Image (cartoon, rainbow over all chains, first blue to last red; front, side, top):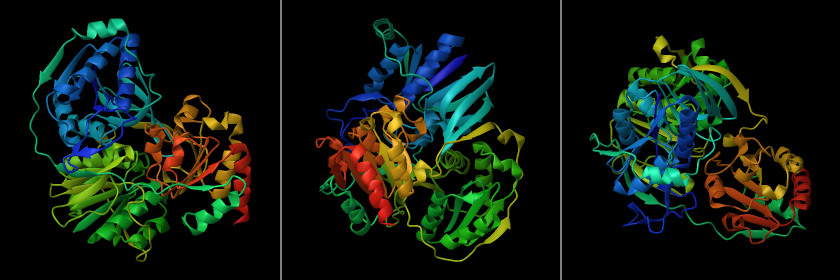
Length: 243
Length: 317
């Protein structure tokens, strides 16, 4: 079985978000970049499938050269080889097109339910549509029996058991697998695993990020005594008007 | 401008977030048509008109009672074409967002999800969308002639602006190839109020000391008609189910009122609640970082404060 895992290279979840150049660019100063947490779950499940039923795992990232340490980390976790599409990931459609270019011939295409920078949550659906194969997201459990795939998917206020056949695309989230931490052997072998750099298929952008802004700052917190909780109820009614 | 709105139902009832999508489309101006797929109550269908839809298309095929993303996207792409729609509006959801993504490919539309405000059309067609899990916003220009907007909760004010709509049956030939996934079963989470849609949320963290103490969270939630949530450590330890986990990698909520009890306020938790209108933090540690993000704070022991608060809420009714 051939598995393709698409990973995003995103700021660590604890990052403070700020912008520079007249709010046109994300400020990367002091920001640590990681494999997208949801993509990390997808990768972990791919490695589990490789260990239990045999598979080759390829990771793919659409990004400039500075994403390579993130890709190497995925190789250290256990992926066999990697593809980097040498382009800035401008919007979901562009990224989906690049993935679809390389995803043909894979039995299973896994990725996170969404990237944690732009949060669109649509690349898996777009890739499925472009390839004419099913896409399911967010997947919390995925088991393969021959070409049959049984999945548990989260929906608002519950879960659904969904079935489809390979090839398919899945957007993953916890608890599909436990995150894996690379060991020393993995880190050493990752250095020599193939990382192929390819140029993007150019596509015209259908959406353009014009500029960014931060939420308005919160006013100071109003403290209420623990001996007078009724005051909180009054304030929520008359002042905040949320009750 | 012709605007088509994909309206979702849950057990025959229109979902509130979908009514917000209708209200959003109405506020954009233009002719608004709602479309409902699968089983829906007749009076529910008509009531879509009250929020601004001039007419409602109903695809009553029982095959659509199962939420198959592929077939939903084919029906919506066809409806956009038949209705000559310039814009498709819908609420972000586990069904709607992937459906819209596929429609965007089929119709060559520009697509933005997590949209928080009405479009600005003074120069181009620009929408504001939430990014970095609520920590920032991007102003995004939708360049293609056809546009799809998936709105985040509270992007539009829900108010009645019209009367019942005319409901027309709309038929689309469904192809077997579009049924490429099959729903085997359905499991409803406990609790009557869906966390992502709740107007009030009461969440507990590690400060609750154990799952056996959740009764006082549930009592307050019941008094407030609220949904219950929890922090990531709480769901990781199995004290509460995963679907209650509020935060960066869990459910993102946008209620009117968010009450956090015994949650210190890690940045990953804040990312899931920063769209709340009003935040109340109850923590016995006065230095808990969550107080900095709160509107109201009480420094105190949850086991003492919560029963008193529940009592005060009931007394004020």
